[in-house]
Structure formats: structure tokens, C-alpha cells
Length: 377
Image (cartoon, rainbow, N blue to C red; front, side, top):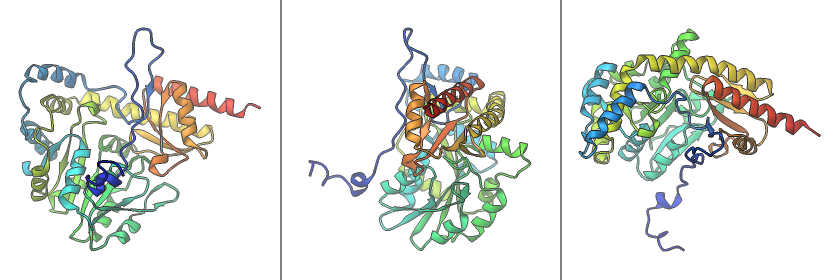
């Protein structure tokens, strides 16, 4: 036994850490072409120009601690979503909000419920609180959540249900009516976390497809036991700044705020988020490119014989029907990084971020090259 194994907590000893894709080395003048990163669902256009300008301005005050309450951003988000100020909590990414909820609501002997093949951080956050995460089967080989199975898994020790909508990594969605029916059946001792990290992309797809996506804010306003997660990492392009927020019952968010680290959201991140909210052109460019390029990638990957699930987010879930790690390694050798999903429970699956037209063509060219080499005698 090592020196610390009997000293640390059981969750720390038992947990497996997060396994990110290896970070690319900074580009240099004599380096080969930089790695095309299509592995982390980042905005291929980067941050809004307004956000960049705001960040640069905010650095002049970097010697001062930030506003611990992110007061200006909370006020803007309260107005933006038409909810009371005390129903908004700004955090260092939506993952910090997940952690706060788990530490506030869970303990050893308690559990949270979600679907299999969903966001890996749910398990990390629940286990860090000493609780169990119950994962239920999906419908039709990854085609979507089985909400009846999730309801059936709830018991007296359940305190949280996580619904990623759209889901990461499958890109699938639960429509508004199905969420309504689900919430009506959830017992009062359970809080449902509606994780809408990809909200802007899903909303744009929903308009194109004449589909009703989300009524999450209506549920919050009528007093339902829901917490809505949103982020500035995806459509707003601020993943490196770590800033997101939760919208939920005021009393529950107050408990979460007590457990948040002091000064966890930087003044640079808050300034960038405030500016990003104002740049509607940047969001429009991002979501419209995403919708059109989703079709290009889906068609190209399907022609290669892979099963591609229709997405509502900024990535595609692709079942290769073969070892995904091997293909992702070969793609990396070609200068393209995608996410193989073995650690998520899908050893034949990859998740591909939808990039710019140029990035997507590089990906398809590399996949075709690998496929042709595999077919050679």
C-alpha cells in the first residue's frame, strides 16, 4: 500500500480521473501544419471579436481580485432569461456547477441517475461526493435516452437526475413535450439537472426542423425542481476561460454558492462573457456554419459506411463498426484529432466536432485516405 492510499478519502482513492485528448504543442515557425482539433466541441471561429477586446481591456485590472459574485454578469443573465437574480449562479464552467450540485445534494448512500453514453463528468461529480451514479440503457443502440428507464431507476435514495439535452456524445435530443411528461412523473425529492450546454446549436436546428426544443425556463419559473446548465464554452467560444452558469431554485443555488471556491470566476472571464452576450452576429455565424457543415460531414462519413446519428449539437456521433481508437490514432498521424469513445462505453464510436468547411474537408480527405489504405491488399 502506498503512503497516501489509506489517508485520502474513499472517493479520491476509487475514482478514475478525466482523460482529455493530448493537448497539441504550440505552433512554431518551423513546425509542420498545426493539429486540426475536432475533439473537444470548441468553436472553430474562436471567441467573439467583442469578447477578445473585452478580455484585453480587463487584463489592466488583473492585479485586483474579481467580483466574487460576478454581479454584473448575473444581472445581465437575469434580464436575458427573465428570471430573478437569486435564480442565477455564475461558476467556473458548467462543470463546476455540476460539482456544487453533487456536493450539496449527494452523500454516501445516495445516488444520481442518468443514461449510459452520456457526459462523463456526471460520474466524476457524483463519485467525488461519495455517491453512486446509476446509468440506464439507451434506446436503439445510442439513438436517444430511454426516459422510462430513467424514471424506473429513481428510488428513495435518488437526489439528482442528469439529462444532457442535447446529449454529449451522441448529439441526440429529448423534445419539449417528452421533457414535460418526464418532469411530471419525477418525485419531489429529486432535482432534475437539464444540461443545455449546446443550447444555441439545438435551438437553431429546431428552427430549421420546425421542432420545439426546450421549455426549461418555463419549468423553472413555475417552481419545478429543475436546474438548467448553460455555458460560454461552446457557441460563445470561451472554453479556455472556464465560465458557465446555473439557473435554478433560489434556495438550492444559495446552498451551492456557499460551497463554491472564492474568486473562482476571473474578471477576464466575466468581461468576455458580458461582451459575448452582445455579439449576435458571432453566434449567428457559428450556428449557421454548424448546421450546414453538419450535413456535409454526415453525408461524407455515411458514404464511407459509418453509422452517423443526426445531431442537435456541434458534433457528430459516428459508429465506425470497428475499433475507434485505432482510427483516431491514424487520424492524429494525419494531423486530425477526434475523440474516440471507449472510455464513454462506446469502443466503436468517435465524436467529431463540426469545424469550418476547410477543417471538415481535411477530415474527410484523411478518413478516405485511411479507408483506401485499409482496403488495399
